[in-house]
Image (cartoon, rainbow, N blue to C red; front, top):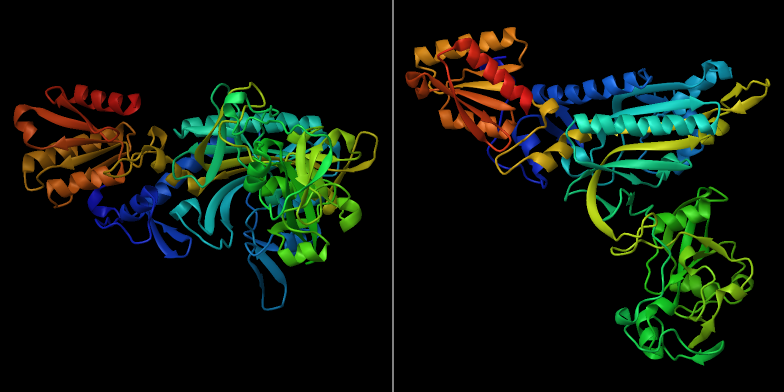
Length: 590
């Protein structure tokens, strides 16, 4: 390719509203064009990089035994109603009608469509396992599209779906996909972490996320300083909490030494004032968190969560606790004072004693860190009163769940090492769906006994277009894009320093044709532009390397520059074939 023929326009100024460097460089380098909120055109260089990602993903997925298909971008709304997600998915699902009043959605994900395919054509266990995947455009009507391709409304995704006759076979495929994804991201040159995750709107029994480590990441992830454990903050686990050590205590009187009794605590409504009033650490205070849980049908009810006073509730965990037995709740909101008063409660004095009888609540949960905890202080469900000396082991029928947000410095549930926070960009996610969709949509197969049973499913996604900014956030520098080896836009660009110098032009043309014959992806910068401008474009666009054909020809030398680190090497041109070999070697070594 000759630069003079390339459809490309670079810009010097940083576009307004482009906060992240990846967004800035992709726009400035002419890789993409923003045409609306979260909607982008991909120009030749952007499409070229996308194709490189797609090629690697396809190779690894095919090697793992998956088969590529292409499903419709538009999905009949009836399939989403069958799965129960048409109303539950929320405003991010773009719904519309055609001229005949038929309802459709723009697919943000394709569980319904692929289940429909399997329902239609998979009839026997002899056809299983089956893994279908596609690389296709998706649309999610994000409320706040931002950060360029990281959170776009229209995006390109690899989504795969597997079908199985047993949970054991699903586990095998899940492990195979984890290994496959690791190979994909290693080939793409991404520094990533595999973390335990929440399944979210997709659903299922278990999931893992693949996070590109980056300071700009929207996701907070926990990583262990001692082992390989990692988890999204929404799914993070910690070791059982022990009582604070003496040097960690704010007060000496810990735990509260009192037989079970009710104390007058006038106007003591929050954890800090209660801690100061009794001179005890917040660890020994039973915090109540009351939420209003919204259901699919638009109704709501109050739900109650209890945890230690120095812990904070994690909303996704709390919502999952509600949906463990009945998947009917879609979100949580803070309960208002009037809601509590209507339930006969006083804000700041809520406790577990007689709470169910008082409120008729169906959902009262305790954080698992409180299992059979004693020496606690809690609200007495009476204004200006608290109980002291509370022992949860004396209660019957308490339901314990993982509710609390893991804090930095908590201990790893696997090895006891310290947990630390870091940031990440989600680039992949794998799920064990089980029979969630197949049961709802009546997608069954005949097992060896001739019995019709629901298909068991897995789901595996990679954000193809999100890979581009993930790499740039990790590797780019203050001058522009730096791509990993397999993602380089061109292997090498030959820069003619002075286009009016016939000797330079002839040599560059000869080198260009020779590298093309060696199947090197080479760009000849034959533009009539200043040398400085050409170098700026080389640095901005992130070509793997550059060969500078300039004044050094008089001394029988050219200069080769590797874009990453801008390392320079002079190469002799006395032996032309040796020159070509050295250039190829330097490209392949990187």
